[in-house]
Length: 310
Image (cartoon, rainbow, N blue to C red; front, side, top):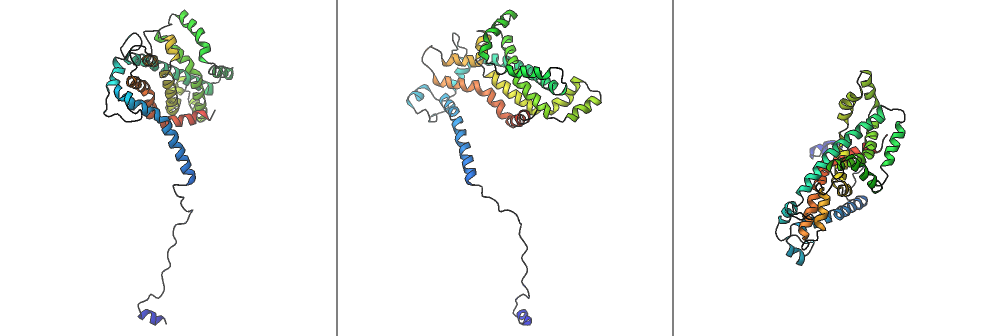
């Protein structure tokens, strides 16, 4: 029988197929759970991006196109004249110099306020974790309690304090106020972040004879980039978008960009120019948006590290 099979050209024995890869069957990408999640994310993304779309589109239209056209339609031609007027010649009250003076005032307020408040809060958080002193927990509790007091309650006392200091109506007054009010939440973030770092590093540095500032600058700071990005975004966003402190403490010659935006939108001179108003609004919000998009991943890492431990 085997001789007949050999003569007919058929193999004597069929090869055994190799075993394929074993494991769970891969799940399809479009599962009901994923469809619900992504549909929800897309819906809310469009919901929050839609006002930005309206602002950008309206800022590139002419006034006749805005009056007689559809607010949702794209402009017939790209026109950046409204952006130029918003920056250089829009009326912000009695003057018509646009947003450019307010932009530089906001820069002068934001940069020192951010740097000083972050540095002091970082030192506070580092000291509260690694150099505990008598009454440190009471000090920290009082500091955190201050962050829950509404700003409006403190306006009048702060006006009196800055007046007695001789800085009311100046940029240093606004810088001082932002620095003070940024301290509690930043101290909390830095304290929790430093508490999550290995204590063995601090103890080893102390054994080697390193002091307070050397450990802070050579060990803690190089490991703290994510939480510094979180603090930077929080402070820049809060200070740049602030209206209350700017309108109260800055004085008429030092108004930040947000106050001038309000003056442009609510100006009583002439007919409202909606394209200029929208362009001014987008220009005012560009700085926080750029900072957030550039450092968004580090922001998420820092929040996760500084908010859940300690």
